[in-house]
Amino acid sequence: MAESRTFVCNHCNKTIDAWSDGNPYYLDHKDEKHYAYHPDHVNLAMCIGNDKPHICLSCGYEFKLDSRFPITNCRKCNSENIADTFKLNGEQCPACHRGAFYIDPGRFCVT
Image (cartoon, rainbow, N blue to C red; front, side, top):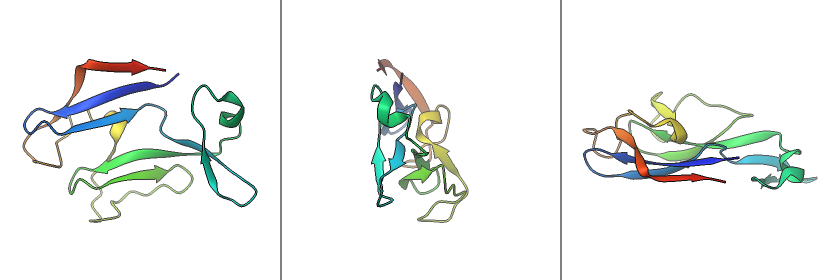
C-alpha cells in the first residue's frame, strides 16, 4: 500500500505531491530500469532499488535519489540540504525561503 501527501508552503502556497513508496525499480537484461508499483506484486518482487524523489531545500532542484547510489549533495548547487519529498512537513520552502511546508489535510490518498 502507498500513501500520497500534498505539502503546501504556508507563505507562498508552493505545493509538492509525494508518494510514500517512491519509484521501486528492477533491471532488465540490458540493465535498463523499469519501475514497478503497487499492486504489481510480480514486478515489485524483482525490484533491487528505489528512485526516491528528493528536493534541495537550498535551490529547489527536484531529483530522484537512487537507493543503490545514494548522494548527500544537490546535483545542481552542491548543498547538503536535501530532503525526501515525502518527509517535507515543517521544512523550509526552497521557493520563497520564508515559509514552511505543512501537510494539506484535505488531500489524502492510499492505494
